[in-house]
Amino acid sequence: MSSGPVIIVKKKKSRHGAHHGGAWKVAYADFVTAMMALFIVLWLLSSSERVQKTVGGYFRDPRGKGRMVGTTVSGAGEAMQVKVDDMDSLKKKIEKAMAQEMKDFDRLKDFVNITITEEGLRIELVESAAGLFFDNGSAVPSQAGAEIFAKLAEEVGALPNLVVIEGHTDAKPFNGNREYSNWELSSDRANAARRLMMSHGLRPDQVAQVRGYADQHLRKPDAPEDPSNRRISILVKRAEPSLPADQPEVDPKSAAPPRTQATNTR
Image 1: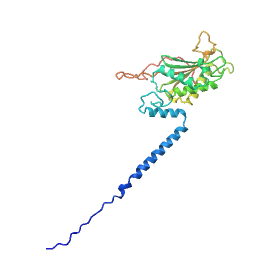
Image 2: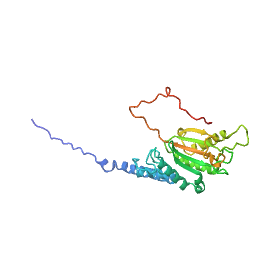
Image 3: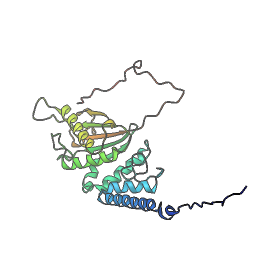
Image 4: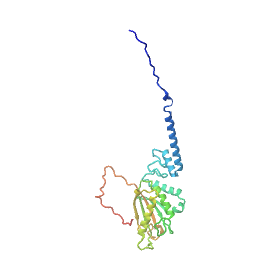
């Protein structure tokens, strides 16, 4: 039995794609990355100094363990990364911010009192005889008052703490409309401060209370008509301690209502 010739077929594998089949993908990815970096740089150049510091702080400490701008939850405002209940650090920070960033603070510093109390950090803007933060008898903030309320809102608004805003007057009877008294004036000034601060960074959920005390809490009881009794007080409240795990929470419906002092708030 005879057999014919054996035919051998050789198949060549094409290696055409091995030379440059995936090279364009790498080049395209590099191009897209470069364009994205360019756009970020252009955006940062056109942004405010505050945004630039915040972004820079994030890249310096992306894990958020530092105290630089942009390194914690608040992520805004220099040295805003203080502990919630560290009132001493917060006091120094606010004083530093106002001294460095407010042009006329040297003229105002003697009328700004920041104290640490059991309730929290109390910032009092005390009036002068001529009216510094509000004109006499008016609930419209002056230029100096608007500036300092805006700066305080930037600092306090980045905190998780609740805020209470209080208005106080001296004991002089309010002249003019008989239906408008120091009660209305103190409440209106406190609300004017609240509105201005909320337009500059204070969050609506931060405002716990707005109080008008008229002349019932004088700063100088022995001089009831002294102009320093007229003031706006901004209280940054301490964080409320959480209950231990084994201590049950009190049902608010069964708890007795707390005793509060009557104030006129609007």
